[in-house]
Image 1 (cartoon, one colour):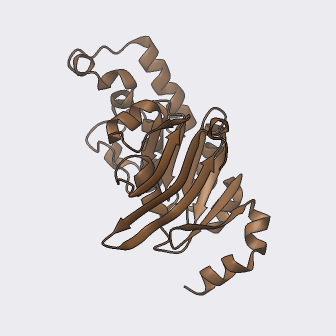
Image 2 (cartoon, one colour):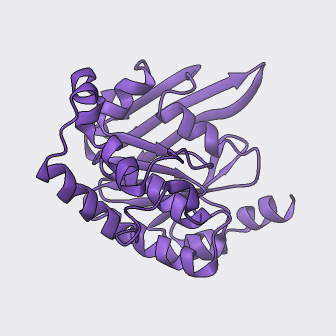
Length: 248
């Protein structure tokens, strides 16, 4: 057993069964601070389920999930968000009828208090923070645009921005470049490399070119277990990985 105190996130012996089928099977996964980890694997390997378990959407059958050395598997989704874990799903969930600025402003942490939402006060702090994030996500000249008029890639960036403005210590992204143009993918890689300066990022991705451009470490899942883990070179060289991918 690893010593948890060294890790931002530690999953140990995590298992979850759906009707007797083990979607995740005795999984151990450790994420360091400031790390960009990519999880890959064939369909049905349990990748999205792992994110669902970490963010409290799915309950584990057995095992432990610790964030900053505290058990979180018993917490509700909202409590986990407050601890500092942000999650982006495959389809962007943004407010289409609001502007880019308003989307980011609404996600600013203070808006979560009941009173904050009722007596909203657009302070200089909020305006500066929104502009800072908009700059990071390549939308600084789009702040007044209605979110529904953005391109698919820009919507993905906006949603990442809505998470970033909450300043999570761990950010989890499910296939962030799916459906993006080549130039948008390149910009997304640059964005992720900027984001990790003060947080950890876990990405689920199928696009291997993109994975190569961002990953510090890659975890290959197969049938709910870790098949292989390491840098890209190690993954490429592993015959089991080839077999799993070619076998599908």
